[in-house]
Each structure stands twice: as structure tokens, then as C-alpha cells.
Length: 394
Ligand SMILES: [Zn+2]
Image 1 (tube, rainbow, N blue to C red):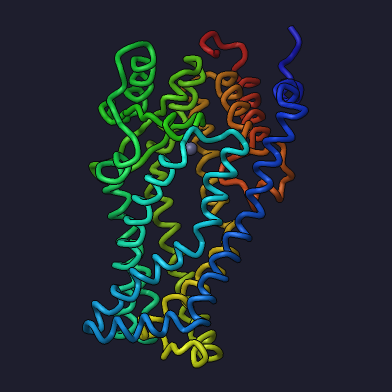
Image 2 (tube, rainbow, N blue to C red; image 1 turned 90 degrees about the vertical axis):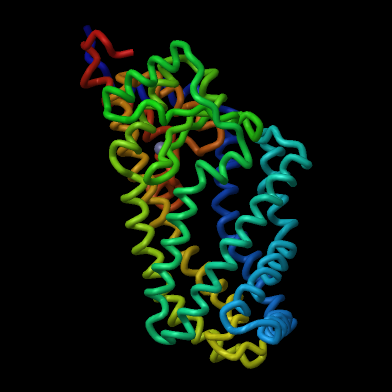
């Protein structure tokens, strides 16, 4: 028997996505690189409009005339956030609705999309306004060291949101039901038990409401942690389903949620430390013209938003790499648990219908929050090469 050749096997998979289909997935994904920059620029322009036309200063005076310092920050934030949402709405509709439809990646009518956005905006605005209330109070109390307290508050809000999301937020958008009895359920629960994952935490979600994308995920913290596989994945072949669910079990067993929260906490503290230097610098130059009195002014929020969006823009490769490294770990855990390298390779090919399949090394490092199709197929074929003689490999 000829030895199994990892490169040849990988290339055989790569050759199944070519021509117009490959050009389309490349164009969709590469367009996303530019959207990161446009997203930043659109938000920048919206904030500059709000500042330059004196709207922020006027809103701040109004909020302070209506309430004490604590509530004034909340009263400023709600109309300010809604104003920014309105100014950036045409761009959001283009990226989230028009562009998704242009690439055939959405199953939603405009009314369904709009209804979802209203819920998103309500929840986002409320959480962000509460957070600004806390951060503004911290700035007034600790004008120099506020960024550390601000980071603590932000992580607190983030953890409460992650914990409550599976129970209170996600059901606003989709139906979550227990897995129906059948071969899929018994195969998934078999792998869950073998890897020490509580089996009553596996759900089915009706994601086909939004799109045909195949997916599964781990959400929640503490008592709310759960694994959900979507109905688009449910329609695939059993070894493809097994390989995806084994990947999700990997996130669970490797405690990826907690590791990510610790990494994100450090990044938020560092980002706010930069904001604590950058925002006063910006306000010292332009605050007078904008009518913003300083960092403690509730109306400092737009300037702070400009600085933090710039920090996050520069941090894109770090954020993507943190997540991508965990995804690669979950891929390898999944291959060991499901023992279905070809099932996993077929799924990687299906996911490459909307993720560029063969990027350059730097491109993958900077822009990919999941390994590319090529990396995933190659990982699967390398695993297969070491196990090809074993009887239970599918
Ligand atoms: Zn994953």
C-alpha cells in the first residue's frame, strides 16, 4: 500500500472549490477586510458630526440640568447612542442586510432583519448607557486611575451578559429545543459522556431563520453553559455533524470561555489605559471647540468612543489570533474525539463557501478568527496520516 500523502490529500480537497464559487467566497471575505476600516471611519465621522455640531455639548447640558451627576451620564448616553445608531444606519443596513443578500447568505426579509435590529439596539443601548454611568462615576472619583476601575466594570458587564445570554437574550432571536431522539442525539451524547461534558446541556437552534450557514457554539458561564448545534448542521452527514460537535466539546473541555475572558480582561485594561491617555489629549486640543469640559463631562463619551475604536482597530490582529488559536485547539481536540478526519475536511470545505480558503500566512494571522479551510483540511489530513490504519477512522 502506498503511504498516505498529507499534501496530495489536502490538494485534492482544495481542487473541489474552484472557478466562480472560489472567486465569490474570496470576494465576500476580502470585502470584509475593508469593512473593518470602513466601520471605523463611519463611526468616526458620526461621532465628529455629533461633536462638531455641538449636539454632544447641548445633550450634556440638558442631562446635567435634569439630574445629579450619576444619572446625568445615563441621560446623556441614551440619546447619544441612538443618534449614532441613526447616523450609521445606512452603513449597517448595507453591510448586514444588502451585502449578505447580494452574496446569497441571508434568509431574512427586511422586516425580520429590522425586528431583530430593534431588539439589538434596545439591549445594546441600555447596557452601554449603564456602563457609561459606572465609568463616568469612576472618572469623577478617581481622575487618574479610573481606567482600572473602568476595566473591572466592563468585565463585570461582559460576564453578566455572557451568563444571562443563553437564558434571556438568545431566545429573543431563535428557538432553542432539546435535541430530538435519533442517531444524531445518541452519537453526540456518546462523545459528550466520553469527554466528561454534561449531556443535558446540548440544544438544537433554528438558525435557518437567519441563514443557511452551518454552525454550532458553546455559550454561557457558570450554570448557564450549553452547547447548541444549528438546524443547518443537522441536515449534514453524521460524521460531519460528529466532527463539528467534537470541536464544540473541545471548547467546553478546554475551558476556552474562561481563558478568553481572562485574555479579554487584560486587553480591556490595556485599551482603557491607552484611552485614559488619548482622550484627555484629544479633548485638550478640540474639547473647547466641541464645548466638552473635560473627562468628567458626560459629553466626553463621543471623544472616548473615537479613541477606543482606534485602539480596537489596531488590536484586530491580536483579537483575531486569540480566538483563532482556540479554534485550532478545538479542531485538534475534535479530530481526536470524533476520529472522522474526512467528515471534518468536508465541513471545512462547506464553511469555505464564505471564508477565503487559501489565504497567505500574514493574511490569516491578521484577518482570520478561525483557521482557513486550507489550514483545517491540512490539520485533518495530517491527523488521518497518523491514524490511517486504524479500523474506526471514518
Ligand atoms: Zn469553535
